[in-house]
Length: 540
Image 1 (cartoon, rainbow, N blue to C red):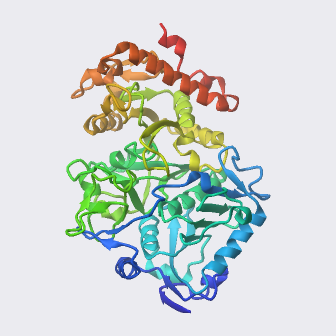
Image 2: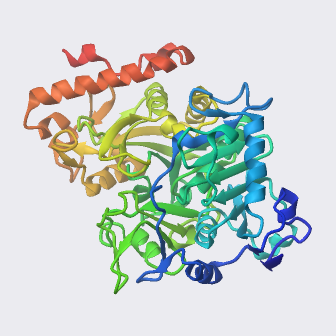
Image 3: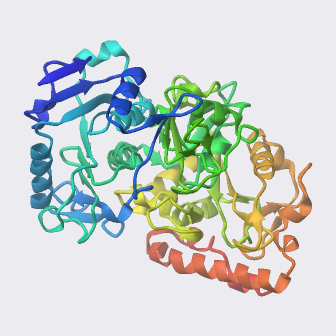
């Protein structure tokens, strides 16, 4: 077996049962990974210098194909209402078949960290079939110093094999599905097969941290984070793909901590990753200059971005392959990104909801009880392409703004967050980055300039001085006037031509909130239950 690159020679692929391989390329950096990817026919260099690859018919995550192994550790700790079970036998079959499948193949290995805080990080070794997948995960996780690799011993191992097709009967997956993600929390093993969508790898690390950190009193969060330049005022941004999490946290006037996955410990907040995974559909240099520059350069990885076959200039407006076009790049491609990935306890939390009904105000201030209610509700809109088979936009309640990544019961995360909010006196805001002037298909997307201005006001403290009204549908506090913002936008009903339709739509959404929250009512106290939107108030 041929091996190249820096590695711990005493802890190689054979330690994981990967034997009789043709080649293993360890911890390769950008340039050689480019060479391998191009030589293998996996990807293309586009104008600007990024490496561009297509993922086939899997252009997003496959949450229905994610399975967790049931054993003594997980049986009574995993939230099985939100996680699919896999037996010990099925997982062991899958692992043995993975080990057999790679014989005679070339693999790429990266030794990385998940978590910027050394006290809580996990060492993740990732074996990939594709060179571009190796580059992707190298850019997305935290890269150890090259000198550390000689003694690196992993805590968890991920094997990513797009060419392996699962067998439902033998591996315990869904009948008829060509992909599967299997997680063994006890042995810290993740097996990914049948999908070329690279995002499955990073989410597997996030899911693993989501399982282990709460037991250590650390809150793992599907959110981005930034901090003021003096390091005193950090903020968290919750929201699913397409809500503006990456865009809003990449503020040129603040320091970026991370754009997707964050931990909150007794030490403060810390990034789980070493890179960013930004949606690129219809983005521009004018609107997002820092993300644009980070995307259009050597070392960035583009997923499913269409480009001119002759000039190779990317067409970021095209959704020919998917609306879920992506760019992966290291955090240090952002000029104002934190080099430590750590910051003080947050002063503000932003919940981003892309309201497809167009009835929520652009910003509202939440009480602590309302904060827990809306955190557990996780209202947003799924955007086309984020998941396989999704077309258009549809409303979604995603628990804790990240249901697919929660191994433990939601109340565990909700209570942890509530405790941290109370302990550190954090202000919580709900921001509608979705629609105004009508429901999706009738109204229009909230202007990014409006959202950014309101978020800036929340973070710098100026919005606290505004006068507030109580929203008659949702009960939260909404500013009545903000300098530079059209007052009509602050009052969603005034942006609708049909006031009766607005009232009916708002009532409908209130009902959806209540219906969704019914499953949590027994796990929360009376104060949180009372924070629910009230149809009775809407009828006044």
